Image (cartoon, rainbow, N blue to C red):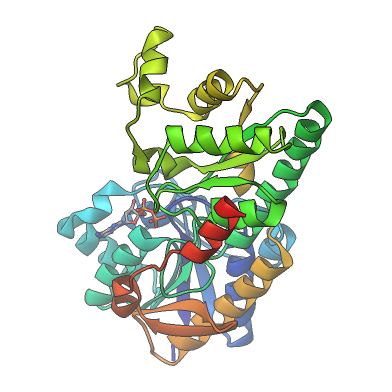
Length: 349
Ligand code: ADP
């Protein structure tokens, strides 16, 4: 029976992380275990701050209850490149033992899961909760924060479409998702956007311009193009890049290939006042949706129960609408399946 467990948030922050920590704290108290909050991802395990409270601190349930609904993460999050070094991980394990922490709940993305797997190999049982807005983990139907991020995009895209409609002009909206187009796909489907661009499917500016021109000619001058931030990686080179050069910009400079650039080319090609908007970090800063809060609540409770029963090396996810767990390694080996039929539906109807 464990007497003390730890919890950390790592990788990019995601709405619902605080709610998951609250759920862990509730379950820990219920089972008579004390809970240590490990600060700034794996950095806290290295105990390099002047004040131990900046590395590991006993969490008080009442404090966590007060901030449970807030976006961001009370425990803070940060990269910890030192954690990639075996000698630093050995040092971390010593600190964890010294603090009397017998198991850890790791809330983060796939990088954080690799860190958790390493800790498990060194004898510290860990259970992962998929805290990332990207929805880029194959073993779970939703990652924690994804639903909130999509809702945030939907609210903003609706606002953009209202002004697009009023002025009869197209909008180009960039949403998050570096390697995964799920936010763009779900947000586009939920707002009636006419074009969606994602990193999983190659596309060209020529095609997008042709489609937008056809929409305009067909009587829709106010279409919305939703672009995932990683979609620039799947863009195929076309003659339209020369347009940028004609304009005196540097076509080979990555920073030139942007939502503004796409809007500029569409403006030139379709003779429409296409307006660019990059939604950026607003997508991470909303209060967790009911769905994400529910998932965080069940996941936190399940994580504590697994550790309590001596079951580590697991990650928690959603399958067929239910919260479940599976071994970390197996989860990381699963291949993501992109929803191509939804993508085609958005882009062809
Ligand atoms: P995410 O968890 O959102 O994917 P990162 O990829 O930045 O975010 O990973 C978060 C942290 O997890 C890293 O800064 C590092 O501390 C730890 N980590 C990532 N990969 C490994 C690994 N292979 N071994 C040990 N720790 C890792």
